[in-house]
Length: 144
Image (cartoon, rainbow, N blue to C red; front, side):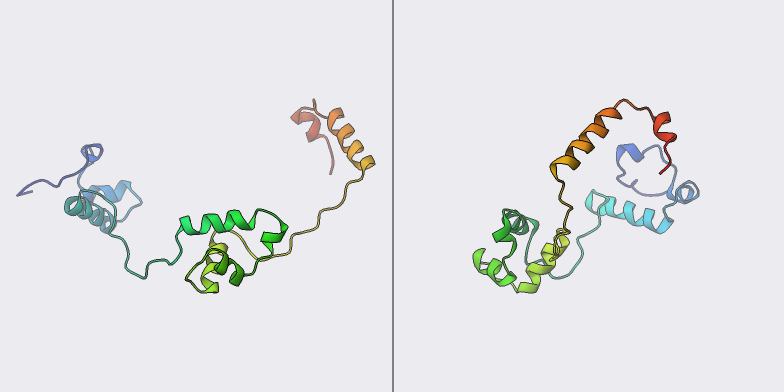
């Protein structure tokens, strides 16, 4: 190859040229060329940030909202409009709703758990104590 050698990181120095990489690697030769081009152009293999509209709410904006909602029963019942007013956000309610969904919080009624009375709790504890020393082989003999 004529001209200057590409500025390739040290840990890639022992790798053969990109044509032979595609035989050993599941990565296409186009992706390899693109990555090496990024390294040469910017000194890193990371692509340029994608174009598009920046987010209105960052993860830093969402964390206090989630923390507030998880505080107690009263705060959990806040509407999106109330959250918008409480946190003085200049965004639409749907933006808050989508951000909460992306954070893993959905507007759902929690599933009711069965009440365990005192006798049932004692039975469960007794069962656990009786079987705490069982081996994998012992559990393998149990038919469910």
